Image 1 (cartoon, rainbow, N blue to C red):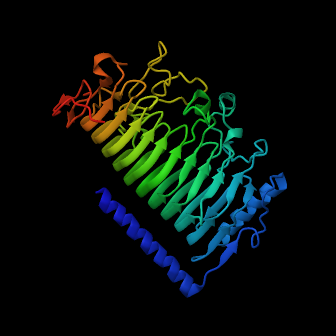
Image 2: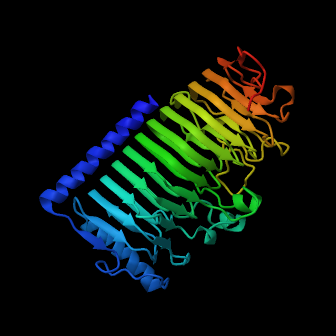
Image 3: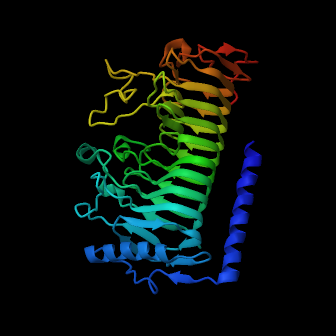
Amino acid sequence: FSQVFSRRVAMSRILAASIVLAYAYICGSTEFDFEKDCGAIPDEDEVKVVKRNRDALSAMFGRLRPGDTLVIPNKTYYFMGGVVGTNIRHATVRLDGTLKLSGDIRSYPKGDDKMPLDAILLTNVTNVTLTSSGKGTIDGNGKLWWGFIKYLENTNHRPILLHVKEAKDLLIENTLFLNAPRFNFYAEKLDGCEIRWCDVLARLDDKSPHSLKDLSAFNTDGFDVSGQNVWIHDCNIYNQDDCIAVKKDAQHMVFERINASGTGLTIGGIGAGHRVQNITFRNSRMERTYKGIYIKFVSGRKDKLSYITDILYENITMIKPIQWPIWIGPAQQAISGNPCKANPCSLCWPEVPYATCNAPLGIFDNITLRNIFVKKPRISPGVIFANSGTPMTNIVFDNVQVDAPSTSWGKGYYRCEGVKSGVAVGHTHPVPPCFEDRTVSSEVVV
């Protein structure tokens, strides 16, 4: 499936590019310079300038016609959040420089819900390309928003760096998403999206990976996506939350050749009544990541079940993961000022006495981990934990090998509960205690 899917997305991109060329030939096209044609001012972060640059970018998005290109030169342009682009068709934005979010937090605009406006919001766009002649940067100035004290003050009241709502045939390439205050890229209702040769970086500590200081950059997700027909490949991600997160109501997605270090190559958290299916992660490397493979439900109801089905993780190597290399179960998260409150599984579990981890109702079915190699994990190989009312079915560990596994859960290695049918095959070691053992050898060859 994944090879056919990748070719299908590539053909869709070729078709989309052909449409742009046709528009340019028939109707003519214009290349706009952000500074010369739009009045943007580089290298200044005064209040008047950042608002001017925001308004110039929003106005330019409104002017783009099929075949047009907006060029942002190789300079730094500070802007205030609240940039909006709507109904853009068959156009290109070439970011050769840097768009840097204003550091004026006190003046940052908020919506009717009192939440900070997205730094950049694109809605209802078709065949739009964000590219660069080198490596363009969208800088969220996140260090001004991060930290434990600021989290207690603001919780999730921080802006998303690039938010996309309803997009068809979207291409993003050669872009660095740097230090987002909250999510780096959050996309809803995609239908055809390719992201390639992009980087995400969100860190405070340049010496120790995912230190306590680093982890205070909460919620700095890399690429969060929902919809269908998404292909993300050849990207580098270092952040303090989900590196890639497949969100609710998603299907037909492939993620490959990713270097990632954060809280995982993730599916979820999925809530009651939503479904994720036909997702592949493959050919990726995770060095000193916090979590590795992470599949999670946040809530569920008997009358409104959620589903995570037809999932493949293949050819993934983890080097010295800091926390759980494999987690299939409840979301381990905090959504309040109390980090130990279970929502549904406490961040303090199982280390802190009386911390709890609750598995919500939800269907995990047909999930395969194949050729997964974990070298020298700091703690147990993982957690496999479902609600007894909706036990996991058709879970396959095929050649899942953990070198020098910790014994956090005793001889069983994994916390394994709520599995109706799970099987370990190939050279899988150690075998989760609630799985059927059909391995050919216990030899570890990582």
